[in-house]
Length: 563
Image (cartoon, rainbow, N blue to C red; front, top):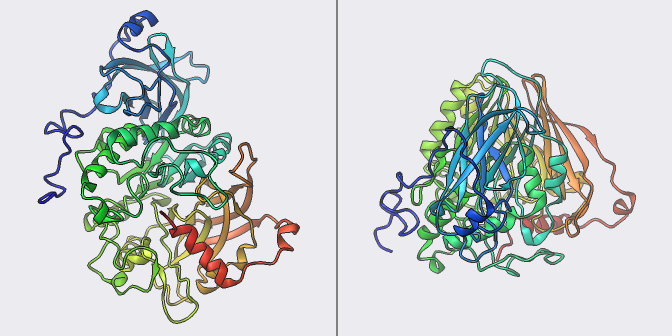
């Protein structure tokens, strides 16, 4: 496909020349019309409940939030249209001040069109700061489940403590989404999804160590229809629906929403994907259609504005990054390597424009906490105890100068409490952050919390976190656990407390969650401090541990072994 680049490429049938005009229609707050009858809808081709994918909210500010749904009476339809006729439908929406959905405070109508997968994105405003609301949708006699959303505090107010959870890496085939259910039961105020919301592989391609417990529908996702079908399959999961309905989300993608380890306009295997730009445009469009994002994130061909800043009163700024769309290609390919290109100052993991945006955000911030929500490991992780530095080239270790510029940026700006949140690596980690990782005695200048996967790589196993050799090779690393779960935090003026939550198994549904460890980051004291560690089960402690070499190999394989 000669001559294609970001500025000129538009996918025929996906993003036509009128891409801006073709964006989803803005919802109207006009008087709500009388609902159509089931018979009237059936005559237009809608004969069953279209709310099979649940509801969601996202990107809150102090006046409102986005509410989302997508109509799909047959969600797994191969054409990606969810069993909907190829015509637009009017969707009524209401926002309530009470959980019983009786006190309507905002209402209106929106159009669900086939061009956008019959998705609905309503940007609700004129609400009270720091308040709790509920919402739902209606098409004719069909009424959606209700969802809960919150507005952020007034920009000049701290509000109360913020309960925030963050998650990553949910491979449908590898296990049940029990952690999403347990997260919903924790009643967070905000959820951050840091990438790998869905996976692109066809069934039996990416197999968990214990075997897959469910199957993907359809082929590997390449087309808009494929991605729509795959998102719909994930959204039919009741545990995921519960997590979406329970709180507003801030979402960013990583690689598997498109293709493993993609970088800018480069797929993992270029020789096998001459039409990667078409694939990327389809993936971006389906991602927007299925996420509670504002109209500022409507994709235009192969471009999508995903990095953004969300303010939670005076308590926190959330800087949500995009480390895929603008990065330089991995310098020495994927995997763990000793790579000279990793230190090249001309390379960036997020592009120089996004770097400048982030540093400007640091300079302007007056928040108590500056939280950087992003995808891949930020701190250095050398897997070699000798003089060689062997690190993951897909993470910030493959873009050392970029990491140093960002770290120096928050130091120079006097950011009060910088905290990096990370997913991707399918295990819990906690780390102090340094400007110079080669000097372990140097000052700690920030903190990193890393969530394990929801289900990717299957059940995993518990172990003594101190036994992992990475913690000895990299003394700034403070915690490791290889079970599935999520991180639940409480953010207030004096501290951020992080509970590393785990479930024993995902190969069967219904496990209870427990806290494996708790870390605290104190106001104006960079670095993580452990305050609780659940005792290791004696039967596990009695087993012979793997050798250090075996544990390093297993960790690298878990993070990098893809089809």
